[in-house]
Amino acid sequence: IAARQSIAFGHKIAIAPIRAGQKVIKCGCPIGTATADIAIGEHVHLHNLTSDYLPTYTLQPGQKFGDLDINT
Image 1 (spheres, rainbow, N blue to C red):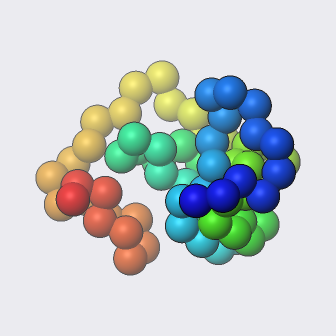
Image 2: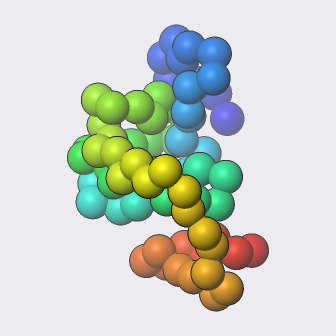
């Protein structure tokens, strides 16, 4: 995956296309909702994401977000 712009160390990069309104998953946990379409290689941050911050998150067996099964 090639970055489409300069991305600061530790920031997120899309590894698959993300549609506006779709949940953004990081390390198996939903971290927010895309506010715009995000292409592969684009920087994912607060300019194109609203945070769903939770102090903790517990995966539920078989949990899915749209078409995405985060437990595989």
